[in-house]
Image (tube, rainbow, N blue to C red; front, side):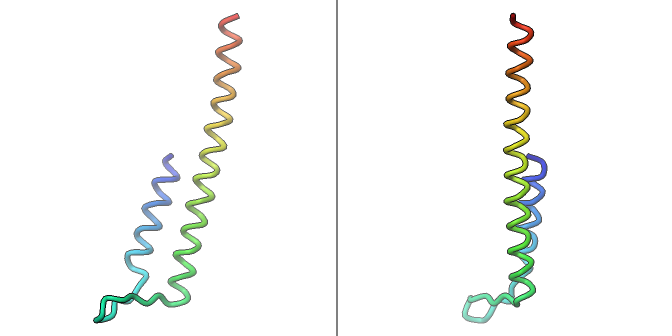
Length: 71
């Protein structure tokens, strides 16, 4: 969860500064800025998937320990 929140903060910070606002309210990203946002998103997604898999592993270990102690 810590990595997820960190990734989310990084993604927001990159997206907050990674654009140029025009007078009409539209925004323009440079190629580098768009690549940075995309990379941050994929890193965030990877961290989230990693956290989910780790929680599943720990849940399985907890189940095994609970069964071993109860019998």
